[in-house]
Amino acid sequence: MDEEKYPEVQGGGSLILAWQIRNKRVLVVGGGEVAAGRILNVLNADAKVTVVCPREGLNPEVAYRVRKGQVDHVDRKFEPSDLDDVDMVLTAVDDPEASTQIWKLCKERKIAANIADVPSECDFYFGSVHRDGPLQIMVSTNGKGPRFANIVRRSIAETLPKNTGEAIMKIGKLRQMLRKVAPGPEEGPKRMSWMVRVSDAYSLEDLCEMDEEDMATLLTYYSSDQVPRLDCLKATKGEFDGFDGSFGFFVGWG
Image (cartoon, rainbow, N blue to C red; front, top):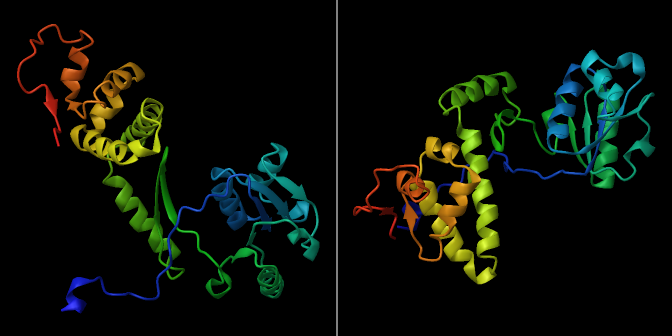
């Protein structure tokens, strides 16, 4: 029956996305501890950040980022004109009435907003994030238990190998190099298939051990659609004097 073939819809969740806000303009209203966390999140995503808050309301971390020029600072309370040319708004102030007013203004202008500690006035939530270089893992409780999300996130992070982020960076570098070797769009399916086999053939430790010369050597096998084992790959560079060309040189024949 059809109902047994397809996943059951589970409403009440959020659509979890990797939102690209590089060079987008983000307005942060407030300068306390919560604002400091929000600011770091969006700076890590390479956003352009403006903080609106009286100077005396800045906590040490936010004041530091202002001094270092990491954010622009407007030394006063929020005004509606602050929303001009803004792509995202984050509020973290101890004034529910003012926060709701900012939320309503954002809705009128169709600006995505997050009103701290008011789930009903949020277009999106901040989850608990584990970061290891290019690897990001977010745990969300859909606004119901932020502190518990931290516990789950730490539990997940403890199960990951310590070199996971470095291995992912190596895979990213190899993909860039492959696109130069086989740039045509018609190569797309083969590139994807070959990279899947590379990812399956090499462990995290193997990937971390690779340097650019190893990657360049590996790419010479792309045209023949082959994936050598790492020891065989290095043997072609003369790193293993005992290599005799025995059967079993390649893995992942497809």
